[in-house]
Image 1 (cartoon, one colour):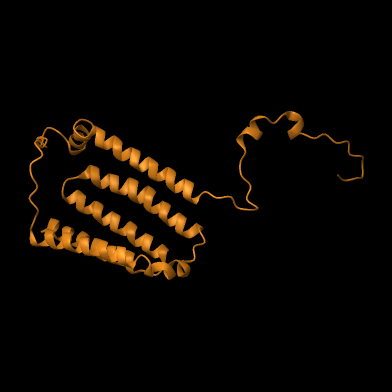
Image 2 (spheres, rainbow, N blue to C red):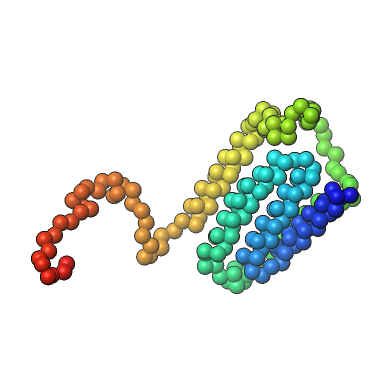
Length: 203
């Protein structure tokens, strides 16, 4: 009874938080609702016995990604009204993606699936959870059967991070930037200036 109550509580709060993320006009409120959705999703993972995924969701997504979103939204001076003016250009692509997602959700809710031909590979056997913990089982699977896919995902994220830095990095007038080579080549004479100040006179 208690587990059922907790499941429905976490599920309802997660769905409501997800709706508020896309419906809130204030982007800061959207990020805060996103953090709330992550916390409740972690609670659902705990009810399923996936404590590793729950901790990853809290540590990585709440502790890093969502907080980073919050700082970016609060620190950048973004004109959201100007951004909304060009929404009509991306409306057809957004509608197409929305239709695809709607079809997928209907297939999940109705229990239908698309039968794909067998790829000739067998799934990894499920370990005995009484002898192997959840975290060990996921680690063994990731770093043995799917190690190349795991490394490929890391490379894709690295390329995406470099691309985001390159796209947003631009020169701004009046902003001082660090010059590492100039700092390393600086001598004592460049950093210290000795002056003979007479009594009663300032510099």
